[in-house]
Image (tube, rainbow, N blue to C red):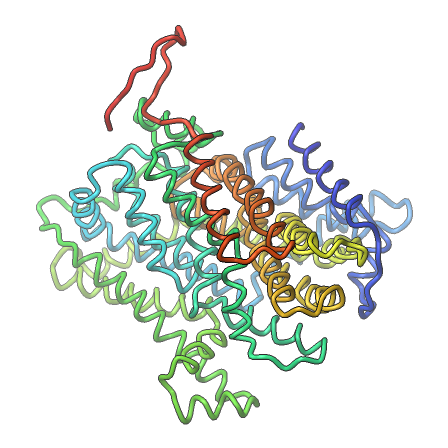
Length: 583
């Protein structure tokens, strides 16, 4: 209940700080609902988040959160019984609407297909072979975490692909090094969206650039949106600092908060998962273990995973190419015709691609390659391969259920006008130097409450650029404010237990979802606070970036070194003696 109080207190603090202002927006159903229900529009996300912490059951929490929203939408006068009945029926409509969405269906299919692919790789012995190979190089918890971080950086092009690829590959290695699943899922989550959000080519970039372009058009400026995007990277403090934070915790082998408890449990008790998570998530399916006597080969993992990555990259280009060529943007069409393999062409095609469809196609093709490899090596028959693939899908069915409920909650929140209510409290009387910090905080709150960074960006960017321009027409100030939207959305998404990337990261690592959220949120909040105090406030005061960024990085290093506690130090029951264990 104390966490619930913290959430409500934070919301009231933001309302007090920001005041009230109305923006000239088109009146729609969501806006009318925001005006009708007011602060009650926050009920569904608060219910879902608080219940997630209390019950430790994310499915139940999301379901009740959705139900609270559909109840409000069907509440007419004092007819509560009718609202309860119709609200329950409306849950089914929300789930069906989510499943009917092409993007959502593609995400579920890619999750299931990648689950089947990982099962095939495991059955062929590829996962064990690559784990044993990495284990020879990763001779300590320190190097194992660094390798996981590097792999997360390599899979830069999409956050979903990152979450579903890195976890299954590195899980056997980190387990052997007695690294908790909570820490593994944190590294995965903290290298997924942060690196995809600032990568020069990724599935995020097209959306981010389009928002920037539209925002500048609203103030009458026709800018090079990609150039502006690149200029925002130094101001993406959270993205940069969280990546450095991971390296610091790995190098110093220091942790704090719930993560310290999880890591010490793994080191001293050998329990890489909590008791709650061990029964339903982390027990290995014996039927997917490699057959006895087969020759282990890393190529049984490298080739299918390589096909997935390369196939996805080519798929992004082809899918985006066909989308652009079938559109009406003559400038982009000319670029693709004249310079089809130029950096600009690749950038635009990646941005225009449908990541959900492409990753599903890539995973399906990689699965076929894995089946052919396994059958040709006589590891399994074709029938056994298909059975293995289906069993692998079964392991991610729960992920699909959670995602459907999370998307349903997002739909309810959108219909209620939750984000519009939060945005409506933004004030134009904010001091110039505080605007980027407050935009960052507001983006984080909306993203945390709605579980979507994309939606938050789409809501705030059209408002941020005109507001920043009205306060100060300096180019760097507008760019900094735009960067605050993009990185604040990522920050809030990281903290949110109803975020799809947070869910996928915990599933990819084989970690209990609530354990992942409990351990990650302390780290995310710490880095977010440093991003404000040592990033946005000094930058807002006009301090040059070549001074601000190094100071912010130094603050991250200092926080881990001085606040963190060495994992290898364990106090005895008397509390007076410490056993130092060399790991």
